[in-house]
Length: 112
Length: 290
Image (cartoon, rainbow over all chains, first blue to last red; front, side, top):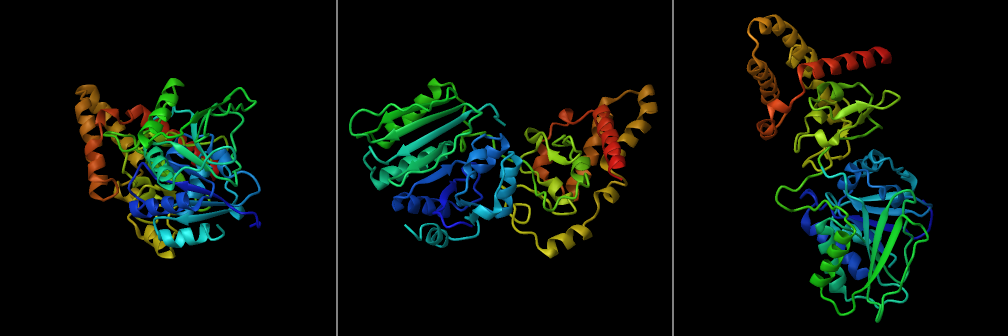
């Protein structure tokens, strides 16, 4: 992992209730309060299902990316399923199904 | 499943040349747009590197409090359309209406969650770190969700065909390699696979023994046996009954959820000819792999 400040990608998981609503709301609130730049998508599954070409660009480049979504294994293969590469060394996945909003935000916004 | 939607991106621009939005407005606009199915990029003073796939048509709507007229921005590439809108003094509802109007004017589709009958992205995702290409999923799935690529590698080919809330194929995968990220529990939802999960798969009643043979072989055999009978008493209804009994057996085993089975239109299931074609294809693939 290089030392460049990571980009943040947040998945809303808008098409299902699998991620706790309070967790995804709280993480988004913290992002909005932080003043940081960040990218959000309504639902990575939905994008993967229709092979949205934006998936090809979300993780590209040398910069590290912090993905706030669900399980690492699911996120990795959702990108793969859409034909996008998933550079393991550059991507850190945070899991809103298992981790608390505080835990996630403390890590992704620690340098803000 | 709605595949015809185009790449549409909303950018909330609060960088150089724009005034920062109030926190609450930023939060409300972002949350509401996401929940309608839009992707939103927030650009602050630090900027952001935003990739745009150069080979695909993309529309970008840049919203900002520009304290005057919105600047004109061009991408330099014909297939990337950028439009800017000044949202100075506008409330959240008005901003949402601007986005909806812009997308609508461009004739772009959007999958919107939360509406009655809304499509749900439910489809299998293969973990190729675990998959051994055994083809059990291809053999098992009645709906042609799976296929193979040019190198005879299993892949999800028709995710539209997948039955919502049915994770049956992941349950028959001996390597726990099939995920449904929207499923409630692990490891089907993508959670790490524990040794116990793999052991459980090995103990599971094999679908082959459950049906006295591969489901396609079983159905094919039934079909062949029935041919002579059909020649005397052609009865599509009986054939459908047989198929239904077979599916019911799967449901009773807990592999196919009851509510999914109840929703199935048995008339839309693959025809005996399609099943035989698939069985032949599978035999050919398995023969090639040995």
